[in-house]
Length: 161
Length: 181
View (cartoon, each protein chain N blue to C red):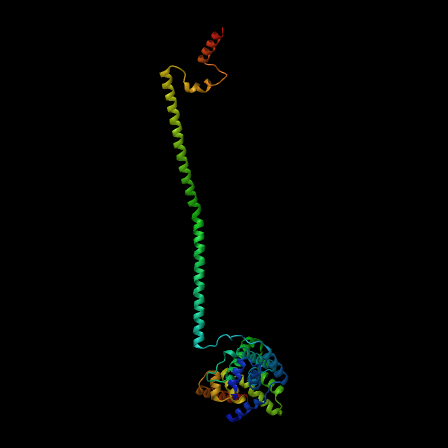
């Protein structure tokens, strides 16, 4: 079989044709189906570069966002981890300061108490009489009488006689 | 190439549905023949041809005339659709089916005398044994009467390369037929 004969045989397949019913049905379906808006992108160097740039930009922004989020989370966890220690330290410091104040006040009280006792003793010794300070409250009491009051009573009685 | 093809493409892009209808009417027989010889079964050929035209319709805004016709663009879509089909369905096609492809086409589509039908069946069967690109070139050149320039544009090769592929394919086909005889 020569080459021309082969080509002639292949050309015999030209008689193949689509079924008319299929052709009409397919045509109607296609023409009534929606078309893609914008149509995506054709593979030209310009569109490929644009796509690559868009993708790079998106990736860069995405990476920045991820880094920002991770940094934020890191900071939050970092703070929350160190916070109890700082809090403990400040409470301890405040407590220590308060204890110091209390100690100072206690020392003052003790000092003044000792001084009062010493002064009282000195005054007693100097006056030889009971401390007026200690008896001051009772001397004003209307139910008790002092020697002065007794003298006054006696004088009033004598005057009355 | 259709005379007012670019005008029809423009009108389709502008929303004139019937303009694509005219392109469909012109190219359907060519694309259908190409697909049918490639897959060998009427039902699959109808499905794949429909898919190819549907893809073209949906993506026509991507088509820009750059030296090759709308028809070449359609052939590319049809070719890719057929190759996708083969990738998916290869495991489902048995050896017997492949051997009978040619006879199935001839018996169901061509009304010729028995001897000629068998000869055509053999040709189709042997075409399937060629490399994909060799089969494409022979179908485009001798079934669809496409000029070498358009075949080259469709397959993304030089005209010289298409001539070489065509010669090699015919020799291979001759060899296959001689072996069978």
